[in-house]
Image 1: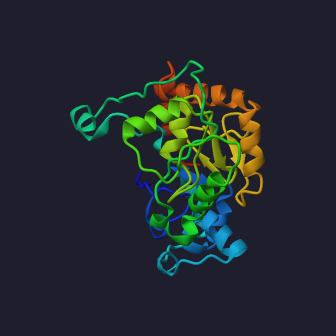
Image 2 (image 1 turned 90 degrees about the horizontal axis):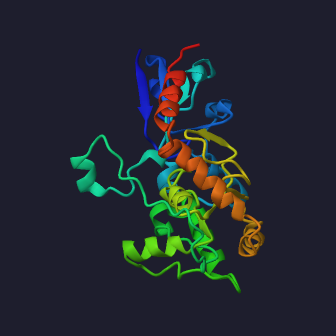
Length: 275
């Protein structure tokens, strides 16, 4: 059996020209409707195509990169591998080199520490991603900075890693827009800090582990951000506190739970089946 492991960040940017030659094609996250892979998307991502069509945003550089669409006869080869929930976020390069088969598990915040920050966003500069792929990050920066009577750190101020982690401990919610792909490391920082994950809707994709259950483990935001301000106000009054607890418990189930290794192995074995 020959399997292709696609480590690209998004559900898009696929190398489907290899499909005729491999038995299975694995991605960290797949579009739920795999038939969509027979279509071309602007900048090769469903969400970048959305902003191109809705807002007329363009990015000549990214749009010039050509990705093959999939022939329908090969769609049955598509499989889900695993996302960056298993990335060793806390270990650092030295730890990873010295302990290649171990995780440096994060310091999970299980108590209700004093939550003085209503919403936290510490994303990278949206200019890195261009006008289309980086739209969500740029828009979220603008929206948060324009919020009134809502506590949040200065989203443009650079701080140390230690200060950043300390802020997360005291945050009610953590905003995590898409970047090059849908899943971001901030998603998991929200989970292990028992903060409410605020994220553009993930309803279009399927991934493992299954951490994105709307209004259960995270709060989905419309891709046009029309509901963002209202959601922040509801977070402020504690409407979604239960989501923080659910999100953390679900994350721990797959990352450090007693059956985590078994669940992972079962997932991989299941995905390796050829129908």
